[in-house]
Image (tube, rainbow, N blue to C red; front, side):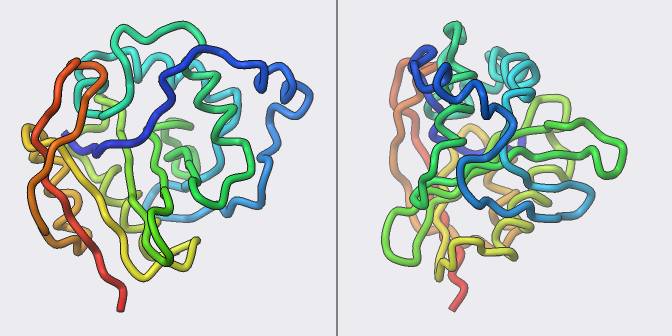
Length: 201
C-alpha cells in the first residue's frame, strides 16, 4: 500500500459548508496547481465529495490513516473539503488528479502542514485501486520538487504495518529518523510509526 497519514477531518457537516455553497468550486486562497508524472495536484472542489466518500469509506484505507474514522460519519467529506477551501497558510490540501492523461479525476489526497518555520509535514493517502503503483511516489515527488511553501525540510510518518508507504518516502529521498506512535481513529488505538525527513539544504 502506498499512503501515509494525513490529518483528515473527523467532525460532521458544519455551517461553513452552507456559507460557502455559493462559491463551491472556487478555492478560497491562491493555491497552485502542481504538475507531476501523469498527474496534477490541484485544489479540492466539492464535486470531489463522491469519490472521497467512496475511497474513505473503505476500511483498508481508513486503518492506514491517523484520522479517517470507520465507519465514515455522514458529512465528514463535506467538512473536509470545506476546511481545505478555507484560507490557511499553515495547511494546504491537494487532490491527486490523473485526468490530464485520461485517468481518474481523484486518486487520492496529499497535504502540507506547517509545523515550524520552513518545515512542513507531508501527508497523503491513495485510493486502494492505485496501491502498489506509482501514484503516491509521483505525488510526493511533485510536491517536494515544487516546494510551494518554501520549506527547507519535510517530515512524514507512516504506520509500521504499511511498508509500502515507507518505500514511497525512501524512494523520494526521505531518510528514516526514528520510531514513534500515532493514534488511529479507525483502529481506536495507538499504532507504531516510522518517522522520515527530507532536507532540501
